[in-house]
Length: 65
Ligand code: FES
Image (cartoon, rainbow, N blue to C red; front, side, top):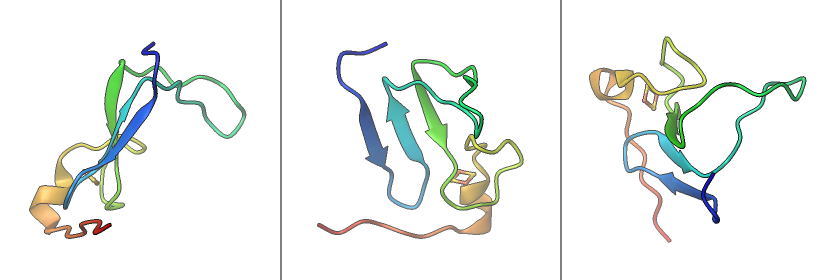
């Protein structure tokens, strides 16, 4: 696992997660690679992971800071 956890909000796409352990509602670890993408559009068939469906459904959301 990386020294620093990073969550990147991708424009019109998923949350890109690096360096964190993913657990379910019972605290049980969900196997995931060092870097993975979590669905932000709600349309993935592999939740909580992104499967690329956001592109085909036209999900649009960018964060402006
Ligand atoms: S963000 Fe990629 S499938 Fe939902």
